[in-house]
Image (cartoon, rainbow, N blue to C red; front, side):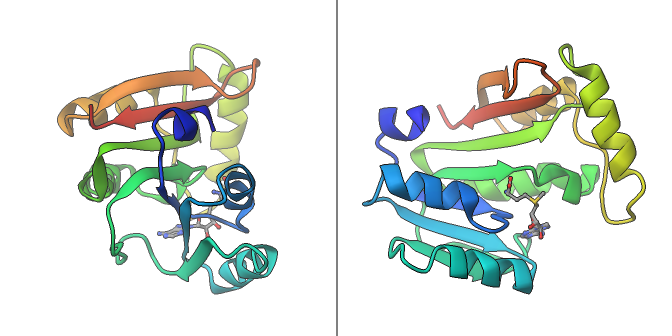
Length: 177
Ligand SMILES: C[S@@+](CC[C@H](N)C(=O)[O-])C[C@H]1O[C@@H](n2cnc3c(N)ncnc32)[C@H](O)[C@@H]1O
């Protein structure tokens, strides 16, 4: 929320928006922002539409992020709890596409468990062993993976901090400048 306010972000896209929880919270504070949620699962997207039906500035699109392109550049692209759905070898290409959607002042924010994190290693290990039971889920990135991807894509790692004090689960901001 601080990032949105400080940078006067107006167009926000939530990739893998789930049932729209993040978007509806943002819309309460920023009723004039233009918010879009991209969700691959039709049933989940329908729940998001129901949950956000009284909020005119939220548009939920049923789409695979790999096939979607926005009509306008975005000031903020959120990738919350999604990276474990994306194969590690496809993450660079995905982040590169997301970067190409950003406005000059734009940022990508990522919330994800971090594998072998400095803080909260047990927490992320439990997450990752749970994901390994599913064929369509993949290991979460390490801190080094995030720094390497940012460097290769010429994005600045502006923030890298635990979401909860126990650690393991992180908020990351990658910025164009
Ligand atoms: C763990 S949920 C996270 C939901 C929400 N972002 C949150 O943090 O609460 C991940 C969501 O991403 C969606 N998803 C997975 N792969 C996707 C893709 N390729 N394109 C769009 N959405 C995707 C899933 O259907 C799921 O609803």
